[in-house]
Image (cartoon, rainbow over all chains, first blue to last red; front, side, top):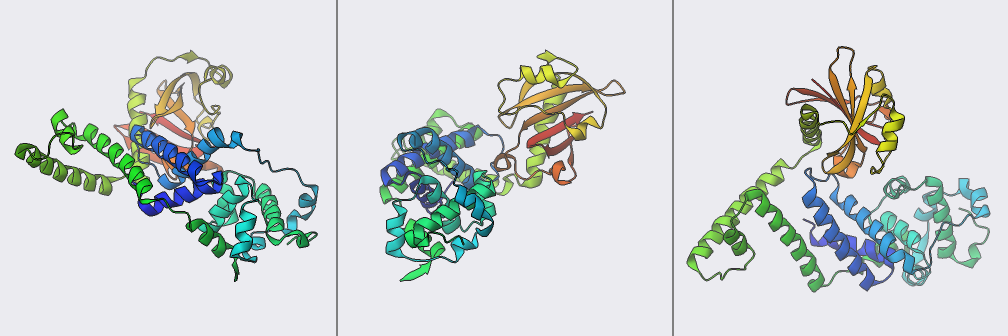
Length: 162
Length: 218
């Protein structure tokens, strides 16, 4: 059984994806229902229930919520590809931001960027661990980090790559 | 005040907390599911189950006693489940047991073929495509055919082979999900397969090309 801390972590994950509290709670409730159904039908105990629960939240989000919003694809950005060797997880580690700055930028982030920040910032995952959890190529994540950084440090960052 | 991004993100996300009512509702969902599962496991009578769910008036002395007894039983079973929850070795043992049982039954083949092509074409309901395991191919067995089966509730492919001594062997393939099956040695990463004896059947368990593969032989 998930305790209150775990449930809050899932809720925060759902908020990272949906961006709205009401949707996040609906998503969490549906995901928990599905998880409990799967768990009771399995003859083996799940090896990583929290990871499995996050996967259900993510899949349900993709099925139920994402189509309502503008799809956020990882657009091909030729500048990113030329700069990708300069991007690393340190690009995020070194960033210093104040609360207001983050709050205002948060509104402009897409679901994938918020999800990356959740896994990296709240769960403390490394970029490799994020890539593993999201089954996403490392290069795609690095491109996402590059765009995130540009949003976080504002227009003055134009031309800054690392 | 400026802070490192990681700390600021953590602070930002942690401001979102479920309300007491939401937490209670989610906890109740889990308790209900857990209770349902225990009822199945302990094979409670309807009256006992009802008393656990509070459907019978709790001021009836017999029901109250029964409730206490059932609660003690549930705590005992719960503690047993906690201490007996499958860990890595037990997970592979459980897989081996399930595969061994299927192997012994030797249910009729649904598709007969000596090459993987027609078998792949038959398995349209799988989330993966059966592969020719490089590890298993070393045994030089003859493919006979296949049928659908399941491993821990997940739909899998069962392939049947005949070895050089005329003995039947079965090979099970299913999409590998570490969250469901736990860590299993990957031969693609140079790891040695697990060999587990179950019900007199020798089972070999490994991961190859993203599939959990189990062979069973007498």
